[in-house]
Image 1 (cartoon, one colour):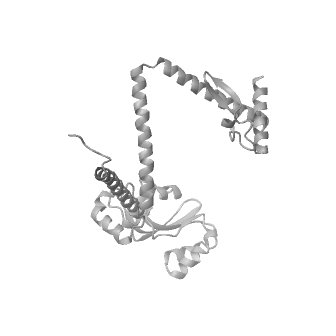
Image 2 (tube, helix red, strand yellow):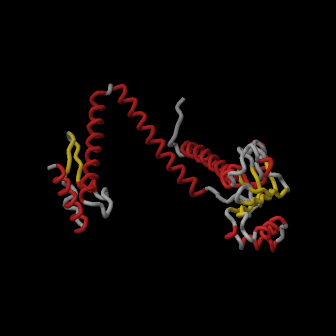
Image 3 (spheres, one colour):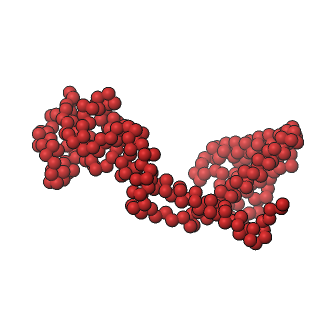
Length: 283
């Protein structure tokens, strides 16, 4: 009977939605003590295209959760001491104030904060604070190719990789289909952990054999040839390069601006209230 009733409720809600009327919205579908759940409360609960059987299950579960929450809350009101309820109500009131205040301040900050951070400002902040930005892992600038040893173009592609020129670089970029794996953007700092993922033949213990700043290293396994060209390398716990830390610097500067604005708003609102006699301190 319960599932038949829920199905009828669902059909009533769907029909009312199609007709564009709210006539049935105030019909109660469940009650816990003096609280009632209405048909309008379950509108939009069931996604379009859901089967009748699944729709009934979704609504049934929702009503059970609603009832359970109401019953537990009523039990808490009856059984918790007055002192505990006063304590909880104080916390609820404070949480509401915190939420409203946070939302209002964020709205003020969003409207007024300058989100443009110049290159000069980034570099200036970096030079003053770079000792605070140490690398969490080793960083490297490198390019590499991994190619099957039986590839007939192996010698030609290897020579182009070793003998760097604009023409050779373009030729390699146009030949990526020949490689099992590759990376050519050696002007960007990357975390060494990414290298270990891309090239499992390299690990923490043997990286010194393959990652050598200013050198091109060639080695092979049973099937493939690897060529690795390292233009620069920085170990862990060293000062992070400016370009690598640049996005973080922007976030830090913007957070600093945000904090300064919040402090300003908090100070200004009390100052203005004192002037307007909305705020007084009694001696």
